[in-house]
Amino acid sequence: MKIVATGFLVVAGVVYLIAEYALHSGADPWVGYVRAAAEAGMVGGLADWFAVTALFRHPLRIPIPHTALIRRKKDQLGSSLGSFVGENFLDPEMVSEKVRSARIPERAGEWLQDDEHRRLASDQAAKAIRSVLAVLRDEDAVAIIERTIVARIAEPQWGPPAGRILDELLEEGRHLPLLDLMADRAHQWVEANPATIDRWVTEKAPTWAPQFVNELLSDRAYRELSEWTWQIKVDKQHAVRLALIGFVRDFARDLQEDPATMAKLEVFKHEVMNREEVRRAAGSAWAAAKRMIVEATEDSTSTLRVKIDDLLRRLADMLVDDARFRGRLEGYMTRTAAYVAENYADEVTSIISETVERWDADEASEKIELLAGKDLQFIRINGTVVGALAGLAIHFVTTLVF
Image (cartoon, rainbow, N blue to C red; front, side):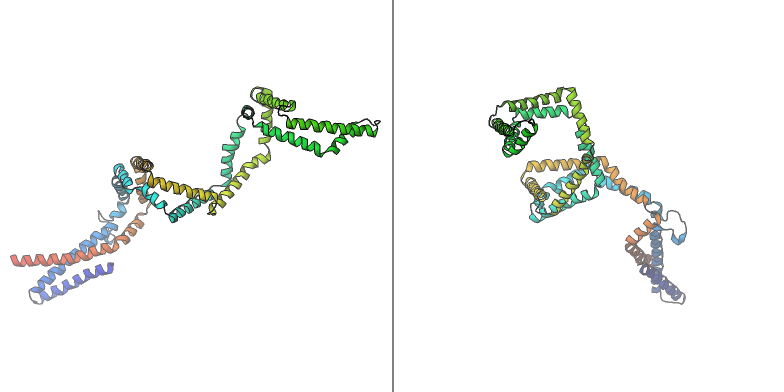
């Protein structure tokens, strides 16, 4: 385009020279019109060449004042562009009106009601979860778990809360199934291990006692122990049961009130929390949870994906059918957009000005010139043509008047 525009200027110059020579050689007066048009065309073409070139560089490398405007005014251009965007695009009222007129909640609900769209949204949600897990470093996640869960567990005293929990379990009767299980297992063990009882009696009997006496004592001990465990099993108010319950009640009270018991539990707590297995528990828990989540997001039939799809379906129905919910959401979005535009417009527009300031002046000028270069060369062409027409008109009027 530069060659074409320069070609128009060269043609005008050649025509001017030919016409001037012809007039000096006695040509007809109409040649004067051609010379005037060519002369004005050259002036117009040169003037527009100077104007276009002066935007981006010094014409002929001569530092003429008020040339190379883009290079010199780059930072002001960025600041003005940022101010223009802030005043015309980040006005709170206009932003609020745009958000309201966009009907974002309703359109989002209608979009999500389509099965394909909802499947796409579910896939993107699963991909986002995997991306977050991929970005999150394992050591950071373990540190968070240790600070928020493990440390919180180890920080308070265990005694009072443990005692209150025991009291609540006793009041709700949650201990009764455990007592039944223990009594049943004790009776089953006695029934299944007569040889063990016989060995105990034999080991404790005097060496001089006759064998048949030991057998009688063993048999009697077995029958008495079996009867005793049976009574514990069937009698809900058996003394052993009541003694165990009383022991648990006393222990629960001591956990809440007895400093010695609480101190012993604290010692036990520190021993437990300082074990290597406990310290590794956070890392193991995170690794297992991360693996489970990743596998669940990759499987479209997993419970997690099904829950996400169900959540999106219910959200879509609410956005479309529940005008009150949709209105609240739209109001929240509108207020948020207005707040951001009102309080952070300068920060947003500063991105434009700061970005332009970081540009290299020569590179920015060259890029802008290349972007608008074709139209700029048309300006040169138009200047040559319009100049020629203007020169022709001026010569005609001058001839007509004088």
